[in-house]
Each structure stands twice: as structure tokens, then as C-alpha cells.
Image (cartoon, rainbow, N blue to C red; front, side, top):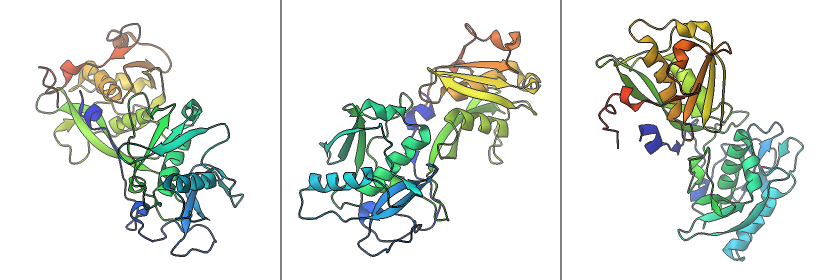
Length: 328
């Protein structure tokens, strides 16, 4: 198991010195974007902007504390699903996406159970919906964690990643004129170890806002090469390489590069160059194989490492994995 597979976590990226911590009922107004009156008892109903690319909020009704806990939750959910107060905002739950039920789990978390239509959400839409629901519901003093289910089973992203219990402070926004949702993720990329002339893992933290795929983020890191602090690594991708296109489906990533990719670095060679890409991409949960083409065509120098045009991860080329000593 790679470091990425074991430690893949969606953690908070702090984009402002002022953080919104709704679960603990701290007051503050880092998202003051509306002209509605804001008081100490303001209950924020999170929405998206009209382009559905950023998270904002409207003032909502404070639930009646005399109601049972689950009834207070249902009151908030009705507001989340209601029409917005402004033409400049949209509700988080699009038409055609349905919530089946909601209840408290054995660990005290609030579970929101959606129908399978939830899986049709775009990457950005799903991230915004999840963050908006959690930030809204965690304002209730008896809700510490929210968990999403789809068809009575925990939500699974990209085939393997389970968000699990989520709290408000897992989703922190910036405080500018617009508020963009983002998180910090750890990605593993493989460069060449100067000492052992084998692939070595480099864990990099990057900002993920849903506008780029993990596959794109990984290849961008490979193109950038090792950081200034990463003096133990040698870059693998040849200078001038351009990623023409990168897509993924059914566990396979399709990478198309320009001719410069074939100008392998003398101290690296073609095998380590190819597998620096393949191993890096295959460390993304759900990715099993990679196809690399040059300007849309296959090349023998690449295909000789492939089976039916698809290349699989090679752990034997990785430092500390060659003898089966996998981290963890």
C-alpha cells in the first residue's frame, strides 16, 4: 500500500486568519457577502453563487429549540432545499437530486441519506453541496458531525475515498469578495532518488477546489519537478513536455503528451520516466492503469511496457518497495 492510499485525507486549507467554526457556535462573520441584517443569532443557510462555483450564505430562521432534535434538523433541511432569497444565489441541492431520509447514527453523527441520483453531481457541485450542508447543519449545538450516505451506504468518492464524519471546520473559506471552496489534499508523486537511481515517493500538499482532477494535479506536479527542498530527487519528465490531454474512465487514465516527452533525460532513461507518471497516477484511489500516447498516437518505446496498450504500476522500481517493504 502506498503512502497516498494509506493516508489519503481531505484536510483543511486555511485561507484566512479568521476561520469559521460553526460547530462550536463561535460567532464571527468571515463570509459577509449579503446585505441582510446580521446579528448574534444569525443562522446561516449556505448557497452557491449564480455560477455554482463558490459557496456563500443567506440569513435563515433559527430553529425552534422547543422542537425535538430531528425536527430541528428537518426544519433546517427544508430551508436548504427552499428557493433562495436572491437571483444571485442558488440552492445547493439541484432539482433531480433527492434526499431520502435523515437520522442520528450510533456515534451521534447526523446522517443525511441521498438517493443514487447524488452520484450524478459534478465534482464541483458535489464538493459545494457537501460543504454547504455540513457548515449549515453544524450550527445546531447538538450536531458535531455530519455523514453522507447514498442509498443507505456511506458515500464513496472516486471508488475508494470515504469522507466519513465531517465537521464544519473541515471546510474553511477565504474572506474576499467571493468565497471559493477548497481543501488541502496530499498527493504522492514519484521522482528519481539521486542516491539509489530508483523511483522515490514525494508527498506533496496541494489545494484542491474541484476545478481540476487529481490526475491533472499529479501530472502538473511531475512537470514542475522536485521542490527546492527536494534535493534528494531528480526530475523525471523531460523539459518541454506538454500534457495535451488527460482523462480517466473505469480506472484507466489516458495521457497524451507532445514529442518532447520522448527526449528522455540521460540520467533517467525511458523506463523510469514512464513509470514516474504511471506509478504517480496509480496511487490515486480507483486508478489501476495508464495509457500514454504522443500527439494522439501510440509509440513502440512506450507500448513495450504495456499490455494491450495499458501500463500498470511497478512497485519493484520504487525505493523501499523493491523487496516488498511497503510503507505501513
